Image (tube, rainbow, N blue to C red):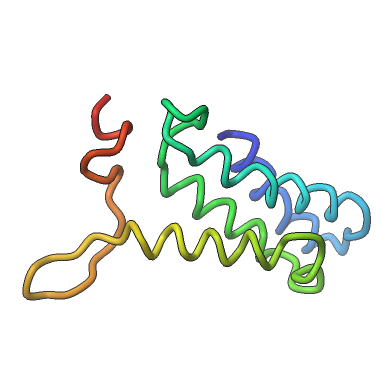
Length: 111
């Protein structure tokens, strides 16, 4: 997961420095391809259902708006938003809440 976090942290720095082009496209390609697989449950070959992986990945995907329509960025962004929406916790009587560290019944909650 650290590669998703690290890549997502570097992208805004590149943007602030005015660096775009091939380096950014390759980083976005990596994020778009890696996020769904990394977030699979461990027993399915992933690294666990961690909201921080999705959140960091989403921040990286959105860091360069000019590349939003680059290969799979929009689709990966929609996937991340959907993943987060399905796992949002709620408090009875108070409506939707935030995101916990694990969903009940997930492999992450079990250990």
